[in-house]
Amino acid sequence: MLNYRLASYLKDLLSRLPAQNIQQVTFVVIRSPERRDWRGWNELDDVLAGVKFRRLREVAIMLYFDYNPGVTRQDFLDQFPSMHAKGILNILEPDLETLIDRP
Image 1 (cartoon, rainbow, N blue to C red):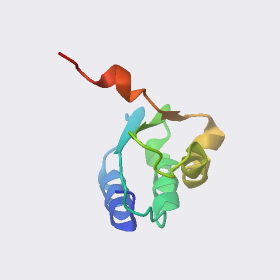
Image 2 (cartoon, rainbow, N blue to C red):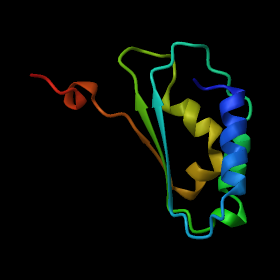
Image 3 (cartoon, rainbow, N blue to C red):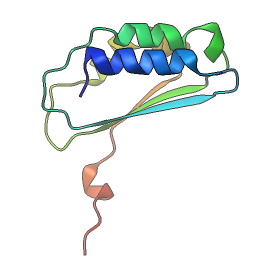
């Protein structure tokens, strides 16, 4: 679920990491029918843009939705403007059909 509590938790977690050598951060977003609350997500972008994450080379966001969730790539670009401006924001939308194991 994309909400303020999750954004606040991730911001706090990442703020506490000794992050000098972290080069990649990946978020996986699995279908979320609940209403999205984007409050706080820009603050997560601020943490990732900070001095602690100066060696960061990629912020990957993997979107796994099996229906149209109303979340677009632009929503994530809007929430991570610093990462987008640096050219390190990678939004991936894998095809669910290729990920499902079938007998």
